[in-house]
Length: 326
Image (spheres, rainbow, N blue to C red):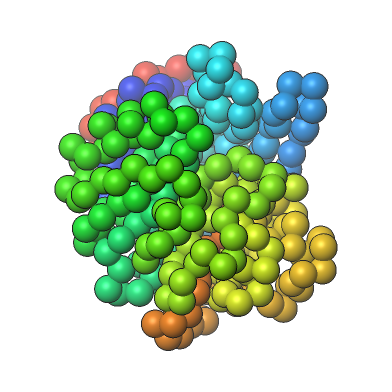
């Protein structure tokens, strides 16, 4: 039985942000219409090594596609010269259960996470948003900006991170891709003076204070993807319309997990899931004065639709290597 093997160079040769945005938006819609089987991601915690391993299965019923992603998060890897996130994606036949393709999931993860932020901005940010603030300059920040540049007209980008050299590298790389003014800031407060704020850090203590966020701001909170992580001050969530990617998953691993566990907010305070907004089941932004927050934990269905797009294109273009497993 042959399986298509796609390494990262294969995946990179196929995938781009417009294709990923389209696939991920469709995935959110199907999720919002309750046409996706997707248990919450499961975790193995490697406390000794400051890392974890996650499995993320999903099945899109009407599209008849299924698969699972295995992904790690090890924040200390950057110091060791390894990516902090590495993943493998397996697509399976729904008819036989046999694997159809095994591919690099690291770039898929980066791209689909960026695309989720782009979809959120499309539906939740003010239409006249032109100034972006970014806290964090890693791989996730880069694909967030790439996606945002596809859905809005960016005039100015304010950016900060803990390491000035990382900020400078980010600006050097991205200014050739996104045609806007890049401004380095020395503190997070100044970055928060924006129309759309993106946070992509792995912190476990809030770094964005409620008082720094103006009316009308939209926030893509990307960094909190495990229990105990939190980038935004809890009180900020009490005055915002909070949209999560998945309520069950976000409750134990998203930006809302700490405020929920502390009783600062309850599940009833969560405005909607993004898929519900995309599908028109619930309204997103209700006024220009609203503060909106998208809590992104990363959904298996985002990986599935992106990987299926890559697989379909690979077969069409004759990319990848056929491997006999059985």
